[in-house]
Amino acid sequence: MVNCPWSPHASCNTEIFSDVNSAFIIGSNSPDRREYIEMIKDVIKEFNLEPRFALDLNQYNGKQAFCTNICSQIRKSRIVITDLSGPTEIVCNKCKETKELFSVNVFWEYGYAAALEKDPILICDESQYVPFDVADKNAEFYNKGNLKELLRPVIQQRLNVSIPLSINKEKKIILNQNTNNYQAKAQEILFKVNNKEISISVILPEYYEFLREINEKKEEQWVGAELSGNVSELGKDHPEYFEYRKIKGYISPSELVSAGMYSLDIIAADEKSMMFKHDYIPSISIHEIETFLDSSTGFGRIALSKKYIDSIGVDLPRITKFYFYFNPTGLIRIITNIRSKIGAFLVQYIRK
Image 1: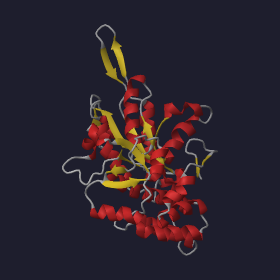
Image 2: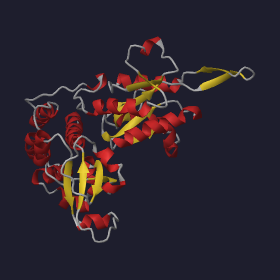
Image 3: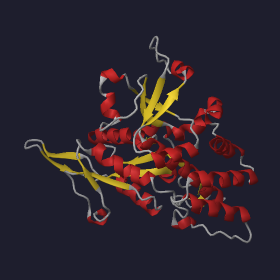
Image 4: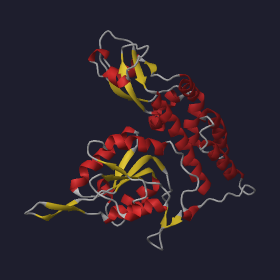
């Protein structure tokens, strides 16, 4: 809990990076910019993140609207995307002359996110300019045709970066290893999580033992399932535990051995392939995932049970075998999500 920077007699319970599955969009509320906000939201959803935009959260309006819709969203989100583009105003109806306006709320919210060291993603319509005080912040300039293509690699790059231990100047963490062994252990594991050279299958057993020592039952469940390879069993009753494992791919009765020079997307575009898009939570173990990533450069394939096929409503008579095909990037995303989940928990634990 920290003091609220806006209300001197209030406190804030929203931890930084406490919702690793959300992304907050800072942008103009003007109707003529809404189309671009929707495009940004579409790209965010591709990464299995929940897009949040203040104007969409009006069900929470009231005395706490600013706190709920903006401040807390910026604090807890995994990433922040700031569109500096402003609305267009007609200055001469006769000659149809227009000018771009800056949205005050956008720059205010961006400044707050930057002060929290959230490293916001900056984008701007290529037809507009940015003020001098943010001109050196490496904004990405877009148009309607390339916005999504431009945004995807930038979001991926942000997600590949582990959540930092020290997040803002108001809450630098000072650990006393002599007086708090558990916090010292949490810090040690966090440093390993942030080191991409250490595989997640090496970190998970140590993290699991730590969770047992501090009696953290809920977190212990999904970690135990990852270690035992029992994801599908626990997932039957608690599928929400494993949303971080969901990857995009295709289901097909065709048994592909090699895609050759073609991508899965190109193969799926052929109706004869009988491939259709599907989001799937693979139950293969972390060890299997890492082994696959070390040894394969092509697509992956998982045989699906008839029970699963029936549960998603696929009805193809006389066909009993189905496969889920996916690109290796999907498994890389699972590893990244696990690192983020562990990192987020440890950061919150250390700050208690």
